[in-house]
Length: 175
Image (cartoon, rainbow, N blue to C red):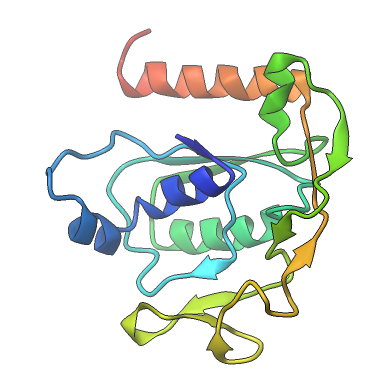
């Protein structure tokens, strides 16, 4: 399980290619549970994922890591017959789980960078390319923007926590 950039790492840890390269222990995750990940990067063979469930939790109005790119990726995974589900929360910004600690205010994350306007594709050799410029991606690219919004939603946070708990109880046959 991971959140935001950690959610992105969680999501892409499911890729078979990355797992084979980095996982020297042989231990496998039982599932992948990313919260509001950035799905704007398309990796080579990114529909070849571990035969484990992927459950993505995302806010619809998230303008830090927009849900649209995750929807597109989920569609590709589903077309490849992968076990993936995207749960969207229509009234929840990036970081909605901060509602668990009482945060219910959405604010601009001044100075924070977002790649919400970027399309990034992996080329041969693992180089991440800006699809618009066909040059290697850089956080200095014009598609990189500042000032996304973040904030908690207590109701959604509780709903997501219950969904994760229910999923894990079913996965591990605990209930």
